[in-house]
Image 1 (cartoon, rainbow, N blue to C red):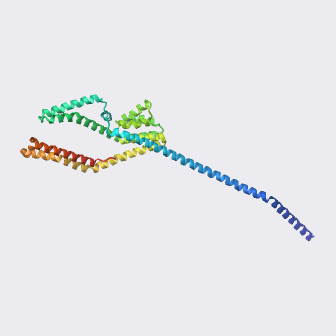
Image 2: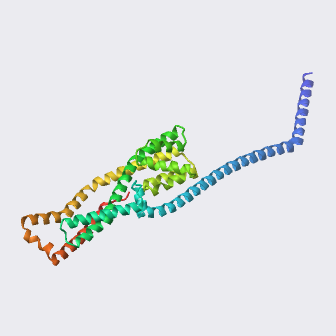
Image 3: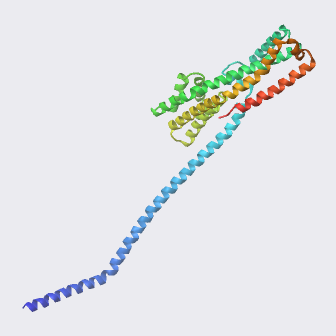
Length: 337
């Protein structure tokens, strides 16, 4: 009985194994095909994912290249415009110089003042008993030299005051932009609250905006009335930000820091060149001081310089060479930053 049960069980087991083997044999191709299809599906999904990543990366690179090209084109256009404006900044017409000096004097009135100054200088030279050939020279100096020197002096003083106040005004604009105010409100705040001449220059931007110009266009025109590189920097920053986008507060903050560094560098260079300037002043004044002392001690010894034609020739040649030396020393001591 035990043997029969064992035989039956063995036969049942063999029959089950045979049936399973037959089923596996018949279903092997189907299972294999399903596995291949699953692997193929995973490969396709992975390829699509990689294609999406590559496409996104390619799009980012294309966008970065497009933005870089836009910035380069903007910088090129601004550089060409700035070169054209630099010609007017270095050698502007007299009417522009008067405007840059902060004066509202018409050109015709300036010529009237120059004529009055020429007459005053000629009268002073004639009244002091100067030789006849000195009177036209005094009139020329009074009519052309002194008025233009006054304009240049006022122009330089106004530029210096503008550079002293501009970084503080930029910091105020940065804080207003960070607090959520638009750029227009920041510019109006400077136009109302800042010190001169920054207030006048920003007021011109506000007035130009009211006439239909945008802030970048009005900012680029600031160099017409404020002939300095710093005013051009401000216009370029606003122009680039309006065309290419970006963080305006960060750009203006960097500009403010650059302007302060430029001012600090100019002060350092001025301190380092002070010794050379003092030496140049002493060397330039020494001939006049020596001539005056010689005149006090022995007038007859030096008077031939002023009473003879040879002395006049010597004085003229000496003044020419002294002027050349002073000009060379001035060029050696002036540094552009």
